[in-house]
Length: 355
Image (cartoon, rainbow, N blue to C red; front, side, top):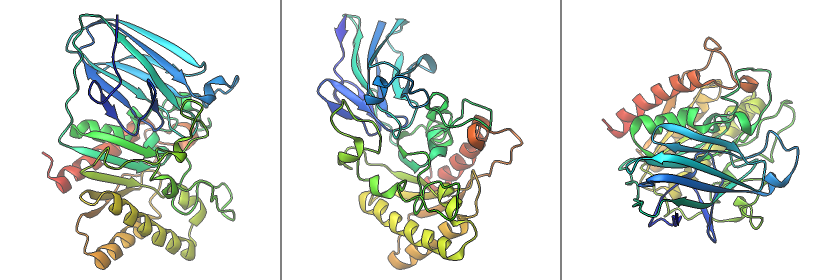
């Protein structure tokens, strides 16, 4: 068996992955690696973050998967500091994807080593001509999508980014993707069960220039929010922003709060434009309620008037109505994500002229 080097010369990095020694750390939902040519046997060694060393931490362990072609051949939660996966009978042209299914905030997972047969000729997966970055909250993460009981709480074990609208949209468009999302986070307030209390500890914009945000660490050394992201590493053609569902729990129908959300949303759009000067920015919203959508539209209109930015669009996503059911904590089930992905995919094809 020979070891596959986890460098960008050997494997394709997906999302904001962090190399530390020989381990490649995955924080954000959907981050991972891809390659082809692992003929015969494949062995993957996963490293758990600090969260994996805490017993009884169910609901917060990082979840990861290994795909061979379209088939998910391994699905694991990192409840131990190290886990090994051994897969057999790979074809020489099979595409291997190793990705993190759960979000950054609760826990991280590292790819410590990947081994294959000595005769295998490992090859890079080509970079797509279409590149998207998704910025969002629990909806983008795929919160609870594997638990179709609306009364159940959050758990990384039932979170799966591949069943959420963003990942589905990227796959439908044949695009590379990068996710930057965290459950409960917003623009001016994170989710709050009490509208009189603003949740200021869960705001996403302050972390956008970092690798992520997490209670966990990469290899027991640094937290993702302590590491500055290099925006030249991944240059998207398109940024899709979907933030406001958690803000709405605070804003309610209060005009002053809604206007504040509009102002800060516009300020975050300026940050997105600063770091993505050539990208089209699409502001999508509405899957779990669209009360703030008019304020998103107004923020975009004001920014266009102020800057002349003609690469700024809004898309209203179809609101879930329960007709196809709900997932944990009344989040969208996969069918609702699919309907949103269909709408978003169609609109992005028009906006980007991607046929």
